[in-house]
Image (cartoon, rainbow, N blue to C red; front, side, top):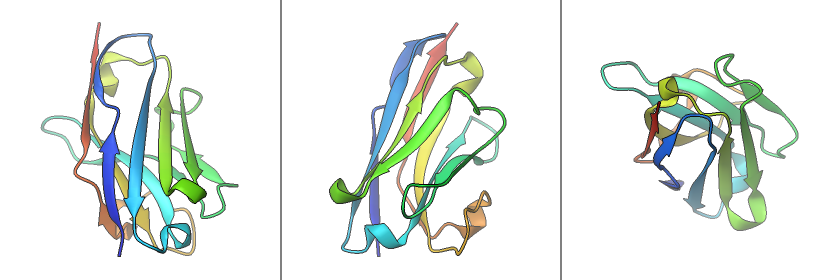
Length: 124
């Protein structure tokens, strides 16, 4: 089992950057694909990015491609989301998640463990 705790959220202005972190506890962090999702008020939780177990493969939602970068540090049991050129529409609660899937999933149904989320608010 994996416990996930996100941090790094906050209130920022449009055009600036923010880096989210997700700390994972448990002995088997390296066996999981890691992903980031977000949920805006009144909307469904949507996929942002995922990274393979080795860190060698990544996928992104079109809405963040070229602006956001997912990475992981397996030695430290951490996964990160670097967010650049933030827009007001990026405002949401951001969640870290772990998947035991064979491939990089974008469906939230394929993620087994979730953090409690961190709020990101982007002002115009």
